[in-house]
Image 1 (tube, helix red, strand yellow):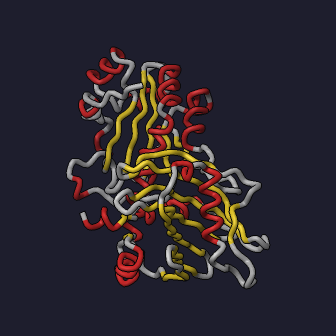
Image 2: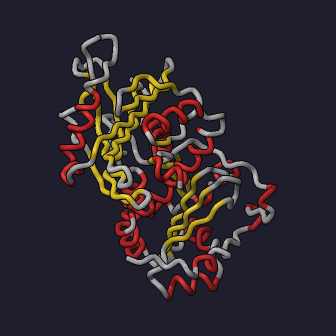
Image 3: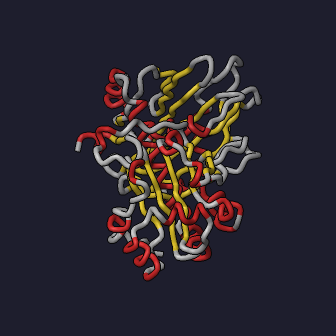
Length: 357
């Protein structure tokens, strides 16, 4: 289904609600607040408890892939429109949900966000259902508006665009992580070493160290007494397309890890946990066909384990098949945000040909 964006800026010149909440001079806005991965949702309570609320929950509280312990894609905080105070209004991520049907106090408050012209536009064009804004009430804030003529039409739009809606906030979170991770000076000595020895570049955050290397693999690690964060890059000559099959990706990572010993046992090494299905999805990354995998790793003696995410792609200029991975060991801790942080680092990876261009 095509999303119509051309008149959405017109629609959201509409934010006229008691405009004391909206500051025209962005320099005067307070900084956005809130936890990473948290979204404040504003909608009528009856709609929140009904089928429309179900689809909102299915979208934002869907299970984060590749984890043993259930964590949602986002932490969703519901707020009645009448209870939206100045603290909640400054949240980093906000979603306003409204349809033109219903006459509750909350419905009326939310409809007052729209000008008469924008309401007429929504009534006449059922293809329009979403708009996005930044820095509406606070600096660094991302706001999404989901709206339609009635609940059924909006439910249909949400179901058909669920991945796009999730992806919007995932990219926002990734950008925030990037700013936070690389605020400190990078480990440029490691970056230069990897570029010279292995012909690839990755932005190495402050504190990471090279744990081990072989001729074609590098393990980069940041370990403290709370969380063990890890990056792993391995490559080989690209010979055939079946390398992109999920089972072959698992075999590649397991074979590469057999060269590295982990833990206190000198005979222990990493394997992919066979009892947990590996999720895989194809995507386009820098115009390269790429397969993303997410799953669970463990040591062969079962003494350690945790989630991982990885990407497999080909550098045609060098004829190399690359597999890059982030994995974490953090027993007893939530791991969604750590994986998002590692994903942000992995997305700075460039082959030598890309880095030089």
